[in-house]
Structure formats: C-alpha cells, structure tokens
Length: 166
Length: 232
Image (cartoon, rainbow over all chains, first blue to last red; front, side, top):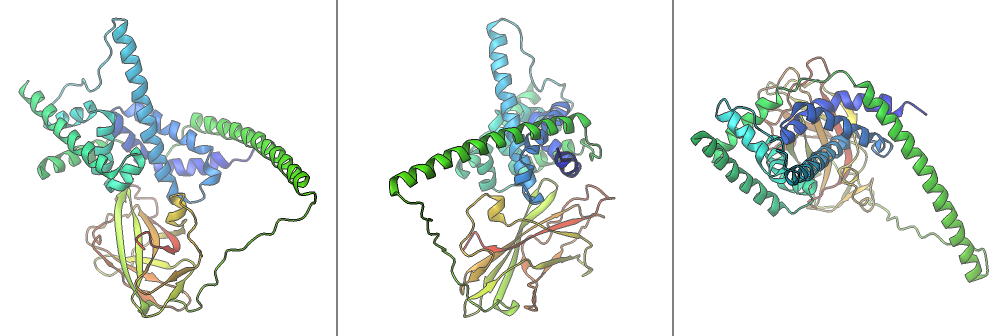
C-alpha cells in the first residue's frame, strides 16, 4: 500500500486539526471528546482522500463530518440516558461545571441546548457561515436555521437568567 | 440583542483560544486511517468485479436482442465557444468573502459589462495588498472550482466560460493564516492572464482577513479556475 493516507492525511491534519477541534469543542463542550471526534473524522475522511483533490474542499467535508459525528455522539448519549433512567441509575449531566460568571453561564447554557439549536448557533455565530451553508450541513431549509438560532438564543437567555437567579 | 450576540461570540472565541495549534499527528490515528483505506480498497475491487460482471451480462443480452455486435454511436454535445477572450475593460469585479474555519473564503465575481459575449478560460493570478498598498506575501495554490466542491454537475462548456453581456463568471478564493496579523482593509487584484489585463475588484468585505494561526507557517491563497457564477 502507498503512504497516501500517511503523508497527505498528516499534512491535512496539521493544517486543519486545530480549527476542527475548536469547532468540535463548541459543539460538545468537552475538549477530550472534541479531540476524539476530530480524529474519528480524519479517519473517516482518509478513505475518501483519493476523491478529494482540492484541499479547499476538505474543510467543508471535515466540518460536515464533525457535525455528523457530534450528532451521532449525542444520539448515542440520549439512548444511554434513556436506558439509565429506565434502570434507575442517575445519568451524568452535561454542563454541570460550577459557573463562575455570566460568560461561563452562557457557555454552559449553550451546551445544554438541543444539539441542532447549538449546532446552528455555533455554525452561524462562531463559524460565521451564511444560513444557506448551515442549512446544507444540517439538511434543512434556511428558514429552519433562522428558527433554530432564534429559539436557541431565546432558550439560552432563559438558562442564563434562571442560573443567575438561582 | 446585539450585545447578547456579541457576548456569546466572545465566549466562543475565548473558548476556541483554549485549543492550541496542533503540530503532531497522532500515530494511532494514522494507523486507523491506513486500515480504513485498505478496507475501502478491498471493497472497491469487489465492487468493480461485480460491475464488470454485470456489464458483461448486459452486453451479452444486447447482443442477443439485436443479433449483432455493432458499436454504439457516441453523441458529442460540446458547443463551440465564441472566440473572443474577455478583456479587463469588459469586466467589473467584486470580491465576496466569509469566515471559514480560520480562513476567509469566497469568490471574485466578474460581470461582463461590455456589449458582446466574451470568454474566460484557465485560472487568473490573484494578489492581495495591505492598507499601505504593499503586496501581502502569500503562497498561491490552485484549487478546484466551486461546482466541484459542491459536487454539482459540470457547467455546460466548462472549462470555457462564455459570458453574455450582463452575466458573470466567478473565481473561488480561500485565504488562510495572515501573519503577522493584518489590521486594516486589504485590496484584491486579479490578472486575467494572456495579456487580457488586470482588475481591482470592489469589495464590501475588504476588512475580512484571516487570523494568524501559525506565525511560522506561510500565508496561503487558494485560487480556483474561472467558472460560471452561481448567481448567473
């Protein structure tokens, strides 16, 4: 076998892994999980490198793969939580870190949003992608993206307010 | 409302800054990638064998149906392009950019403001100057057109782009790692090649510059070939 995945993948990894990890971190709120997801994404894309001659196309695929992997992760977590609640065990909650200020409240509030709302907010606000691109990634219409962002921000305000009150 | 958004954006930027630049490639990931590529290769070979077997059966059936082994005529749908190349004076340029994973990317759109249809082919030379007018040092690489990135069908006639008066062509650009960090607005220049001249496209996104993520790494500028503009 040639060193195609080794050489080219390593080059792409060094070039894109940090930004990809930042995106995965925004989506998951967990640095270690973000790094694992990014490695999984690169492994997944390694098999398709022969079809990706354009380095510029790679990050669009990478972004979409990370979003999909994060969604799958949270789907698995939902199943796990549902099983644990049926078996009487207390599931671990995400975003239980102690809040030390309004910015931490915003961060933890973001992590408590439904995954599609959080993804739409991160892609629109952090990645600064236009609605159409976010819609392509989420597989929905631009109007749905607007609604996900708007509802997510409204919920986030409620989270932050109630955390601040409590 | 805007304050909330700005604050949330700042929270995200602060959290993103916790992730350092990555220099080392995890060996375990490369091992997993190699195994995956090997598995895909085996699957492709098996798939090809099945396709060839299926095609052979199909050809055999055609022979039985038509009673002869004649060749199937191939119709060429190519259209002869007009022969006049676009000159810079025929075109009006505009740069549109957006942020993307630590880069800025977008397109330079060129609208035919002349009175006749003209053509663009190949890949232009693109350069960027800082607010003081000094050319920014970038490592230019060739990238694929947007239609390929989007896995859209190949536009008719491409790689020749025929521009009727009022219609536009587009060049995909992506700029990464501007170091040291540029602060002021930048200006873009596009050289059409073949002596057709240069344009200074206008831009509402002149202040869009990528972050300096790797001070020791070169700044890169990926430039695609001419293609029909998605907007027409």
